[in-house]
Image (cartoon, rainbow, N blue to C red; front, top):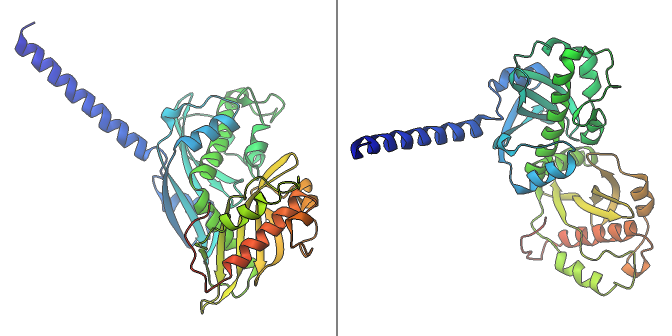
Length: 352
């Protein structure tokens, strides 16, 4: 082969590689987007009034969570940039829309997932599929099987990554592969949504909690201060108490204000680590430090945690008085709320 022919061949190969690279980037960008957002959202939320789009990229934490939480293989070529659609009706957040593309028996299946604010399946639609079993899977009976389920509950429908034999026994054999793929897709959609948009979802959840707890609430904002150092010192001096945590709990705090900007209270999310349980807790604090409610999301608060916390109006002012991890968590929330309610203090930014 002459030098000129070799040069020409190398040039063609370079062009081919460049085209494949561009195509791959375009694919990763468009992989999880709605083709027609208005039509797709209206088909699931017919009464919706608006929506907003939040774009995120799957990184190592999300990939680690997928590998940790799912009992079937994950092919990371699937993951790139994702769009989350937050759907509202009359000013209230109604739900989330997340589109996923899965490799099916008949090619690529594009599935539009609707999740509630607790990250449970609300509904789904196929945006594109060539699978002839589509009508069976979109029927009311199978749709009812997946509605209202979180990741853990979805995984109970699978055995070795496929639809369990005892689940939907009257579903024809030709439809079962698509059913298994759909359930795997739902589990991945929930985990990706939870991991990629954690802070966005926290703000949405806090807004919903504030609207119910404070009738005069006009808005929320992330509280700019993290009093971790203050609490860390108290914890370090009380390590002889086994109920006291080894370090301050990571938290997000949201200040709730009325139309004049007056502070009404605080909504906090903390990570609680108790006996045999770890979960996110949401605390509502009125005024300086009056804790009026605690809940958990996306799952209901566990009985173990509820018993560990005890009465919310319990007067605990010293970590040495805390008999359980829940009581220590309650006091920690009160300490955070008090510090956040000090208007004259110049606070450094922080928080988790």
